[in-house]
Amino acid sequence: MDNREKILYDNGRHKYVMFSFDDETHEDSFLSVNQYLIVQNGVGVLIDPGCESIFDELFEAVSRHVEISKIKFIFLSHQDPDVSGSIAQWAISTQAKFIMSSLWVRFMSHYGFMEMDRVMALSDHGAKLRFGKEYLEFIPAHFLHSPGNFTLYDSKSKIVFSGDIGAAIVPVPTDYKHVQNFEEHKQALHGFHKRYMGSNKLCRAWVSKIEQLDVSMIAPQHGLIFEDEKLGEFLEWLKELQCGSDFMKDLY
Image (tube, rainbow, N blue to C red; front, side):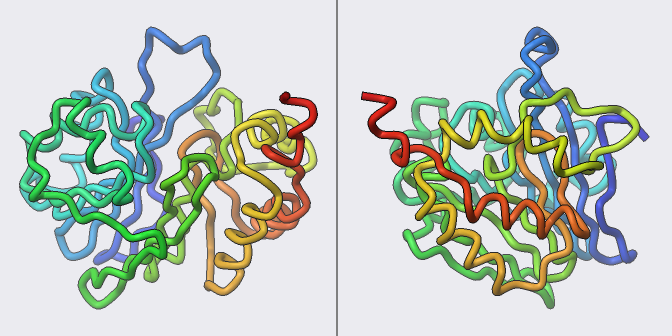
């Protein structure tokens, strides 16, 4: 298996796969990008498939786990190009429905995507979607960091895809994908979250949603995965984080 690929959960019928493909021309930027795939009984959900430059590599990697024609949904947590830039290519390659905030539907044409009848637009409060015998829950995470932003909970694997929440400015090691020492990892989290997250009040609102769920892992779009005691440590850290508008006087 490619060292940029890791299976996070697999019981033979339900699988959750993490990919770490990035534009090699920006390999010195130290902003690693993760993409995710959920497969249940041969049906796939692709999560934040990224920019155009990684499409070919990700397409090949995804096809090892599910037939491309069986990708039923593609979830875009927000509008950024490292999330949504390849939407037109995936639209051509699949018959999938695209799930995103209603705020960003009109912006997708700027990525060359015109098939608006293939979009499932999420209202601000999110939604639950049946997925086989399980469900996917789209949890509001507005202004963390996008005005229309969602995270995704998979009820079977109990994994939360958190988008930019939990993002860390680190090169992803090839031998592990999980946070090893949270106290050390905080240094890689702080700068990004202080500037990109909206406010402490918004962080607390998201944490309160996550604490109501049975969660085994938090998997962000950038950086490393939180599980076991590191998961709890991260949520406690985020609950106390001062960020965004909490520093209004410093910014203006």
